[in-house]
Picture: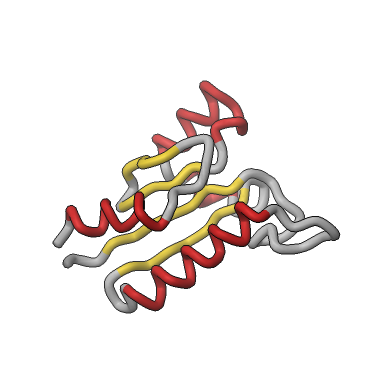
Length: 107
């Protein structure tokens, strides 16, 4: 498997993981668990980065496909995920099964 880069583009949140504040969204707990599992199970093969709208401006600007979607659909398209720069999911976070399917394609 060649090196794979997964990027998650988050909507604006109160902190970098979204795991803060008085009420924590269970979806964000699952996303965090998925990322940790990917980093553990695919150590050295996969990098995972999260970028929050408004805080990681350069990451958004450096991906023309992401910027085009935001320009055409607004931030409601977030969260979205890319694998090696290709958008694989919009309007939600990818599940572990969805990500593993992309990882298996690269074997």
